[in-house]
Structure formats: structure tokens, C-alpha cells
Image 1: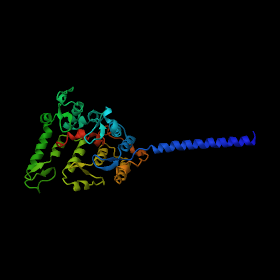
Image 2: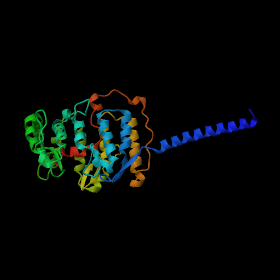
Image 3: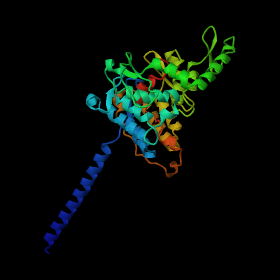
Image 4: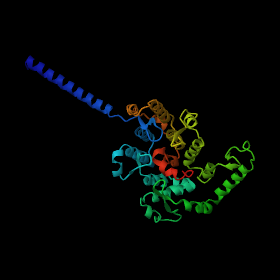
Length: 359
């Protein structure tokens, strides 16, 4: 082969190699650019920058799976498709104007028996029954037809239209008779604790589970609720923290409440002090035995970084880091924890509000 031809071939090979390298580099750069958002700005509840639903979903999925992953992934998908929300059967616009997972579907997943669901219908006493029956009621969107909803099996609580939430939900009038009939032992314990509170004649003597209403010592309404919630119910933690925040009446005091782990405990919204959603996320991860140090460290680091971003525009900029799961993270756990409720507070708030203190 002539020297000129050899040099031409060499140049061609070099050019082809360079083109291949450039193409590979371009593909790699494109993959890097298509990042998962680390943060998301919550304009409806906290007006703060928090860990994004996409990163939380990816982080939790890397450590475990189960029905709760479907709930979390569905909510993330709905939240990212606000403009098309009304055309997606699995999504709905909630009271805060956010596209969220359909409440009826979320309720059914939380109430369904393990291993297909979270099993809360069996674990949360009257709240579990309200959740299971609420999943049936929430499917009816017509106020006139709401009261006629029926379900198979015994003990269905019945449905009634809630004009405040504009939703068909469990009939509140049917709950008290059910409590008196099916939860006599639990109510008896509540009565004994209420009598103990009543023996405290001064505000100084009134403490513990009791509170002073200005004239007498009374049992906290939250403790009455928890008595019939079931000892294994994950909602207990959520209800306790919500009650603790609701007892704070000052906006400045509410926003300054910080937990021992440094997380903000409460947030002021609509003239009410509420439990901070990210704090509830952390608590529920711990309840579900998903509180791996590496998972929590990653989530806490991301939350710290996101909170430093005060504006929605800058909140949307950071990309989530690659997720690495240490082999030591995988340890045997109770099956009930694997399939239990995860921190999908945003998706479940509408369902849980019907359980809480008349809100």
C-alpha cells in the first residue's frame, strides 16, 4: 500500500475513533443533563423548598418495595402532571390545588390486607374501618347518590356527603353507635382516664394526658382517639404530632418549634399550626423499619440543602445525587412493616383529615 494511502487510512481511523469518542461523550452528557430534581417548592402548604417527591420515591425504592411504593410513585406522577390532571383517572386536584393520587385509590391501598396493601383496616381500630369504608364512599362524586352507596360484607358504616370537603365519605353519625357496640373495652379505659383527670382540682395538678380548660381538668381529646386507634397503628405518630402542633396558637411560636433531630416540627398554614410534612415523612420511615442510617442521612442532607433555597426558581435547579445502597442496609424486618404506610402525607392528608379532630 502506498504511503499516501496508509496516511489517509490512518487519518480516517483516527477521525472515526474521535467521532466515536465524541458520540459517547455526548450520550453521557445527555444522561447527566436528564437529572432527577433534588428539590421541589411547596407553595401551597409550607412555602418552602423541600426534598422532591421524585427523589424521595427513588431513594425509598432503592431500599425496599411493596404496595406503598405504588402509592408514592402514583402521587409523584400525578404531582408532575398538573396541567393534565383532570384527564388522568388515577389523579385528582386536592383542596390545595395540587394534582395528587386519587383519594379513593389511596384509601383502598392503605386499607387492603397484607401483602397486597398496608393492612391498616386491621391495625387501626375504628380508623381502619373508616379508611376501608371511606375508600368505597370516596368513589361516589354525586351528592344525591352518596347516601345510597352500599358495600358487601357486614358492618359497613355508610356514606354521607361532606359539604366542607365536597366529598362523599363515611357517615359520621354512624360512628358513635359502632364505637359503643364494638369498642366497649377501649371506651371503658377512656372513661377511667377521664375520671382520673377530673380528680385534679387545679391547673397545677392537671398534667400528663390531661389538660386544664379554664375551669376543670379534662382528658385530652387526642388520647381518647388514640385509645381506639390500635397499638400497632402507624397513624398514632401522625395524630400525636398533629395534636402537638395544633395546641400552638401563635404563628411565631409554631414556626420556631424544632425537634431533637433538627427538623422543623410544625408549620403555620391558614391560621392553624400543623405538623410539618417532612417531619412526618421521617417519622413514618422510622415506623416502617425503613430508618436506615444511610437512607435518613441522604434524606436529611437533601432537606438541609433544599431549605437553604428560598425561591421557587432556585429550588428547581439542583439535581439529585446517585443513590448507593450499602449491602449492610438489608436486614430482616417484620413483614407488616414492609407493607405498611409510608410517608405519603401529601397524598393521604385529605383521607386522614376525616379522622382527626373535626377538621
